[in-house]
Length: 210
Image (tube, rainbow, N blue to C red):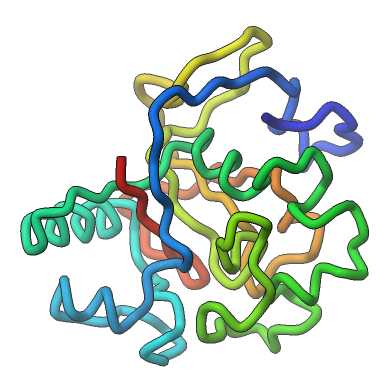
């Protein structure tokens, strides 16, 4: 998890690269939660760029947790936000490269909506190529909330990490339609200044079971 070749201030919180073991199995949504799904569960659609199959955005971490709680109650199938470790594991899909498909930025447009091809807006989920495990839009479209508080990585091995016990900001992963390609890498993490109660454009989420 993370990367060693940190060369700038902006990627400084991705190091050190460290060994993580995830012992509990989980399923992850193929797509970020769509506006249609969110509205069915929550009765509203807060998104700026409307589209039933577009990912829901302009949702806070608190909103995402509320969706998980309401969906679980309505369906009897418990879902939650992924931990940051689960998210990176699923995004990498067994890879150790910058992106799940390799290291070449020139190929990113096949897998992600980001600044260079999105026209600054979200697009319907599933239009780009999935990673090796069949997950779509892990490198772009919307940033995705994770369960963890944002914190610095440790140096030691970890098992089923869940992040710091407390903090001010929650972790975001995945890059968005408004981000440059470097922000869409598997190891890239954001969160500084993203308070869990704040609502932000280009930020959505996906859910896991397990």
